[in-house]
Image (tube, rainbow, N blue to C red; front, side, top):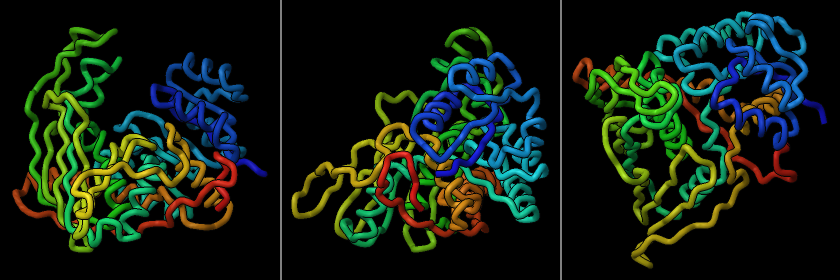
Length: 369
């Protein structure tokens, strides 16, 4: 079994689960190098996971002829420049979410990738996990009848009370829609299909945030982005629904994601996770019943999207977490603010086509097709 060689750009907080899964779970990936602006992070990762190369700069990684895919784990406002430079150097890229900080950034990256004959894959890949894949089968097999609507809410009071360096969540490329919206929207379009229009309202409730977590406790962060975003989505298949994300509200539980059908209601679990419980209500029982998970990857399996991309490139088949999907999600997320600014419905111009559902693995961590 051959492997696809990748290099990490960014070895911050999210890198830990990627390093673990790509060295222990997904057998078709080989990490051959890491790069971080803080060299000590790269050195620690290389030592812990037996990675042979540490690059001084990201451009050294891009110039390495062994590297086939660049894994972009930088901060959201850095995604565009890192992905752009990697594409210009002739490398495929898999990027953490979002694809870019604006629709225009996404458009430029898609155009460059197509010009170079390259691919961009992207997070989130939680939709490839057991929960969302099971929800997709339930919907497609008619367990809730014809879908007619949905409600999805991500509610919390922000990250300044627990994150070690939360400022970027309130800077360009941040905010609750750009941070958590990718999970909800990626799940939504994989379950129900393309979004055709958004009518949204967005606001910044508090001009500043005070960090109370260590080690930056007491620092004041200026808020540059909307922190309360809500609106109506119209899907191409006629389904309509509401999506709300906020960093402004005290809340004591995870908010809900519900899909309503002509013959039942599906409680979709938090799309930030891979294997949370699913509940379905049918008129025969009149109450919610837990549904068993029917697919692989119930644990935190971040990296499955990259593994799928690697096999797709080798087998010349579509990538499940592809650039059409990540751009469509970016288009929809940024449409809330565009709609809010012009006080009118915003048409979505990007295309989207769902890819094939996941197949049962012969060996967990090895994607066969």
